[in-house]
Image 1 (cartoon, rainbow, N blue to C red):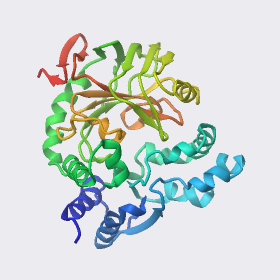
Image 2: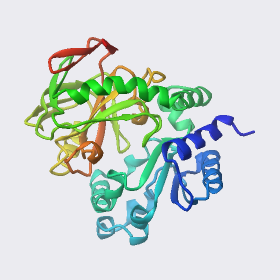
Image 3: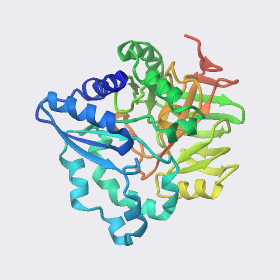
Image 4: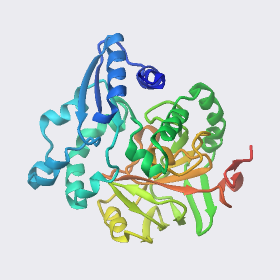
Length: 359
């Protein structure tokens, strides 16, 4: 018997997040374990008179890992023309992650992954500019539940609870906070081992309330690329990227660049990512988590970056829709918990303390 929340989830993605129109070509990617959602999304696209171009992965990742392990370097550098055509011609894209193993990517060397990302990056401009409308989400699997330390049933309740919100009401609530950031020039983040400032001068942000990521529940900005100054310690939660888990990340910025970096574990991987390209030592994003249903860390960035009372800084690629200009293969969101003695200041005024808004 189909869980009725799957139908509601599909409706949210197709109608609210994308507002799919008749005649659209919609690429639908997902893991085989997401079959109930893939079928519900495809059926709804059909009822709306749109094409559902379905691409199903056996392992739940969008990458063909056996091929990526064995292909010669020149194929990694130049993606197949047929593989990039959807990014050039499709009207929308729905990406549904449903991993069997959340660390599957760790089998791919960082160098091979970097080559593949560098080759693909020039073809993703329509994704970054939202010329192709898109939404990324997850379907509850045992692997995701295990990372979160939950049973699958409890994780299903958590996922649907975080996604199936009244997003109009959430947008109205978060817009009050966003207005303060839009009017400010400098953001200061303080906390244990942390005192860092970034500039938002001349830039406005976006409220994520049922848009390109599901769950939504954040305000996000691209700080001025040369503005980050100070130190930040991401010691509360591990940071997961490309199948690797790095703990105790500490960064020091000068004139927008990471000039010193360390980690308690996998420091070599952190440095490798920072040295990936010219933009990977700069910030592409400042996000403020606001989802009231996400209150604990899950080792799952899609959810963790929305934890109410946290911020996240993304190393690497900026967000053109909010004025970001930094270009990089990397976009690594790293979450900082402010709920234990952290502060957010806007132009010297404290607006949030220990994760609680003061407005």
